Amino acid sequence: METEPGRWMVTHKAPDRLLERALTAPPPRDWKPLAAMAACLLLGVGLGRLTVGPPEASTDAPVEIVATQERVPVRLVIHAPDATTAGIAGTWNDWNFDTTPMTRGADGTFHATVLLDRGQHEYMFVLDGHNWRTDPSATLTRDDGFGNANAVIEL
Amino acid sequence: MMWLLTIAFASADFPDAVEAALQEAEAQGLPEGILDDKAAEGLAKGLPPQRVAGALSGMTPGLVEAQSLTNSDNPQLLLAAAAALQAGASPTAVSSLNSSGAVWALGDLIHQGHEADDALDLVRAAEASGTDAVTGLASASASLLAGGQGHQAVAAHLNSALSLGLSPVAVAAQPGLVDIAMANDAKNKDSKSKSKSKSSGNNPGNGNGNGNGNGNGNGNGNGNGNGN
Image (cartoon, rainbow over all chains, first blue to last red; front, side, top):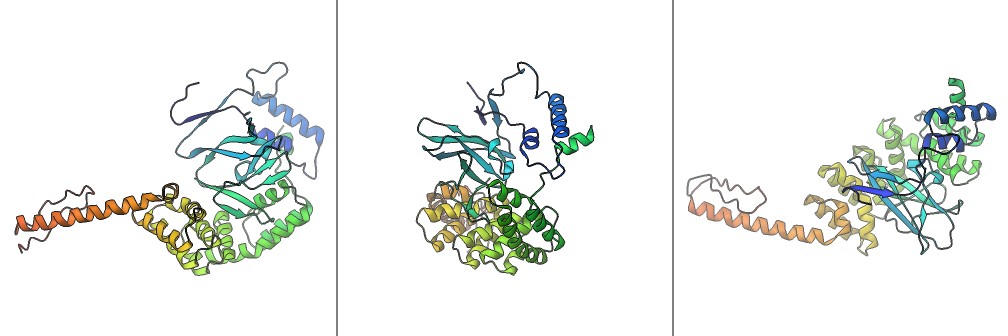
């Protein structure tokens, strides 16, 4: 597949962050499950995201990542041959690693490309959904205040 | 309809212990929500709410001090200032910097082991050369330190780079850039000096003497034309 200079193609699923946050966020104290389900359904239909029957377009379709002056694609990699799944949790996705899954290569190396705003971002890798790991190849890290270190990207 | 959406998309509530720590921070005059991201981070990492609350409470006094020092309600600046103060930066140094990026860089450099004064000099030099230089400064330093250089050598290396207008990130990726740029700079100065003296000798009293052939656009050889 040909791409223009400055464009990257990745094949992970495109997360609908707003909807996904609503579906995965811890329930509030006055949680009303039925009302919330109805609201999600209404909003999902409204956005054309939730449909009955075959979707109009597969969510596995390639997502185009386009570099701009304000946003920069960053490819993050971790070698974790013993892990089954991996994701990235960081300041750009509210520390929700589900929204930035990584793709596993044959040699046990996981990778993902994320499009980040210029500035600073902190992140950690999450292996198998629970094993939080500082990026071993990060040059800059910061104490996270909880006894671990976040890797820091400066763009 | 709206109430349904409001319920579905209400911002995540925190456990009571965490909520209490957040409210305590606000009660001390800190900007609303300044610790929300940190709370979300701790909970996402699977830490017990009590431990997250303890960490947040531990951060609050530093943020209050940072707020008093910077006289600002910018959350990013306060978080950066608190981290820099905790790393060992002096209040004077923190309050002398102009952006949260610069303050983060100061704290990161000190945390890496640079002397506080050296770190401040580096950040000021980066600020003077442009905001992009500040953004990559701590990463560049970390990269050079990881390459085996000592702190003073790294500080000198980055200062040279900044004075030559080089990006710290580029220098970290290719440390030899500074040597190349310094050699070019010396060559240019030498060329400029020769052109000047040639120009002076050939154009007595002219005062314009071209002599600019050094390629950096600075050597316009305006020599005062004293005709010596």
